[in-house]
Length: 335
Length: 299
Image (tube, rainbow over all chains, first blue to last red; front, side):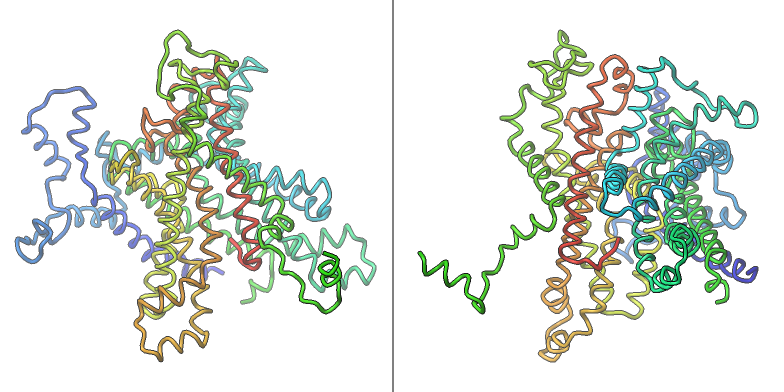
């Protein structure tokens, strides 16, 4: 087991290097001058010299890569330089240094670390909501296939895929305001300081991203259970006269859970996508908000850091899902 | 007349082949309902000038935040613009961007997948690695990065870079499915025959493989349109997609409209409903197309 985990963690390195290189060059495809933009946002009238000095300070005056060619017609006019942005970036990564935000100047790691707890908590709450909704609903829907219960559950889950999470969030805010004349307080309180206020504020964004999540998982639960119920061993158990509730619980559910666990894991890794919009609606200062801000400002260094973080999360979650598989299905453990 | 009735009921006579359209309606009623809703949106988008009651961008300071009435079916927003007319015009924006990006992403993905599956070997391994990496990012993250990098590139009044941003996350999904279909097609004798006839790789891929993956292509593109409409709405909501004054559903929900909605909830209820219903309809249509054309396909 330990060997498996270590091997998977080592395999992570080439993937992350690939992601880092790809995102570095992708971000530099377009133009856009963050330095000029920053000064303009501050409303300062600055001369070209000041802009150049700032570019120099941020290291943006260096060429992007070891070889840089003018006019896109290599090899004419190509220069080779060992002092370039790519080398700076990769050298930083070797030291686990993601660089400093071009906009605020703070270390990217610090920016991410400050925003991470809010997003993580919303994500975990959304996952709990999804599991609590999806497993029972999907099971009922499969057991009572093609009855009105099944139709209600299916409408619920198909709607979850169609309703934009940010709109759902806005409707929740409107509803709270209209029916209870109450709104969660703006500003994040840690769960360790004031658990009630914390949950009261974060449950709404968790619900609005959790609905889609629950919908995807419910569909998976239903179809997976339907598939398992067709298996021979279910028929055998029934022929032996096993109580049908016991069949569902012991024989069917456990086997049907495998694909559901995959979906729950994958969607957890993808929750950051839902948070990008939902955090905006609920005024949460999380990772999603940070990502949108970084993108609209063209803060390359911060975007690179966030993209690498998302890749790490994705790989770790896949690893967790694989480990969890072993607990659910002993056959996988043996191999 | 009597002859015809008699002959059609005679045993052994060749039965008339059922009309495929009628068959689809009968076996996939939900999909047909989805199709009808899609048709409604197409009518709105095409006939927007006749259906809309007001100019969608016309502001009227005297009619700010009016509730729904016979004059303004869906009420007016904080600038006195008619919400109904904006929703109608928004259908054009959503469908145009949705369909263009789904076709763009789907076609490039299918070509890439077919090429990858056809050649196999190193090219295949390399392309599949890229596909794996792209699939490990949420679609909106990819789209936001592309929007941030590319900026705006308006062609007529459509932002081409927005279409590229929305299409990019679709490419790996389509590529993966096209590749797996291609792997089984390449085994077929007609591909050997085409090779023996001396056709080039390009011709075999375009003329012999592509027509055979049209079913998964259609299914995926329909699902992509739903995804694209949702993604366009999300990007516009974040202020990274369609920009004012173009009427777009996501844009109608963005910025300060959330604050105004406290006093004028119709401002956000109707555009949101328009998005939900459109995505719902395309999903419904895509799901039943899948059941209809390719029951074994998943994802």
